[in-house]
Length: 230
Image (cartoon, rainbow, N blue to C red; front, top):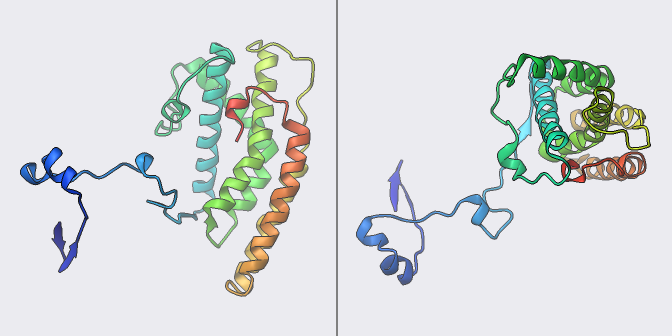
């Protein structure tokens, strides 16, 4: 129990917790981590994303760097490579933090192709004056994800990192064009009337999501390793 700003917070404890774990004696109370909680809404935060062009560019660059890092690990370790991906992704690495200059040069080449293909989509998202919800951003990332994987694996084949598997990775950018349209439509609906258009936004989002899933499943579902597909 603690008191701050004239507010008292209570936490119910069982006798087992008090005596077995000596919480009273040690003046300690156990708080479970988010991973240990059995309610999926426990600790949920309705986070929104909003920033200028530089912020969005940095976000997508970091996303691509994390994805390429995992792909390279699979290329080097084989598709039976096992790891806890959440611990392996370089979430807190700086933009220019690479193990070797050769790796950095290799990444820059792949990233430039990624920007050539997905740059217009990223630019459209960065133009948003309204906040992007977590669900909306995940949808954009999941659409870009398959295309980014294709770019990375095509480069690996060209450089001899992985073997050619008998098929060409598709270069269909139709999903990206649809994302741009969706970004603009959502912005328009939010600006017109946020409350009145809430249901319309939800329906619009579901329609686009279903269309994207069909397109991506047809075009990209065979790409391996499946472990890194969203």
